[in-house]
Length: 218
Image (cartoon, rainbow, N blue to C red; front, side):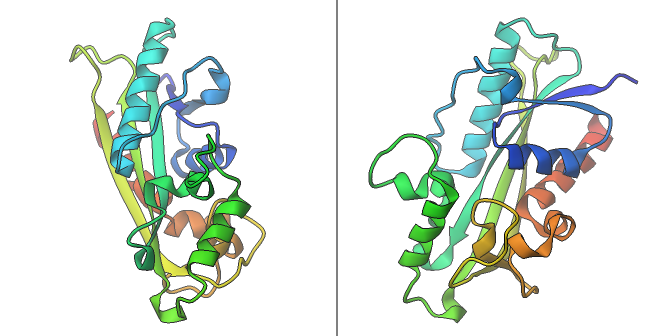
C-alpha cells in the first residue's frame, strides 16, 4: 500500500512534530517549509473552524495549481488557541498574535509577549475564576478529489479544559503551555511531558477523531 502524502498547512515546527507524533502511521509528511512559494493565508474567520477550513482549501488549491502529484495527497490544516472565560473567550482566534492586536504589527507575536499580556490582563483575577480551555480544529482536505469539481474539507474539533497560572511554569511546550494547567493535574502543559500532553491536549483530542475517521474512510 502506497503512503498517503500529508501536507501540513503550517511552518510551526512544534505543531508539525506534534501532529506527526499524534497521527504517525503510513504517511509521507510535508509542510509549508517544503513549499516556500505558497502564499500566506489571511486568517480572517471568526472561528477556529473557519480559519482551518480556509487554510486547508487554499493550500490544496495551490498544490493543484503547481502540478504537484495529487494521487493520495491531502492537506491537513490546524487552527487552535486559548479561550479564557474571564476575558469572554479571548484571545481565541487571535491567540498567536494577541500581543500585536493593538499595535497592528503583522504576523504572530512571540510567545513571551503573548503570555505577558495575558498575565497582565488577569492580574486581579483570583484563582477560582481563571478557567480556560485550549481548542483546536483540524481540517482534512483532499488535494485531488475526482468525485467533485472542488475537494471538500472535513473538520475535527478537540478541547482541553483547565486554568491559567499566575506565572509561567515549565520549560517545554510552546505558546501558552507554561501558563495552562489542565483540569485534574497540578502541572502546566510545559511540565507534564510530551506523552501526557498529547494524550490530554486539544490537538490530541482532534487528532484522535481524525485518526478514527481515516481508519474508516480511507
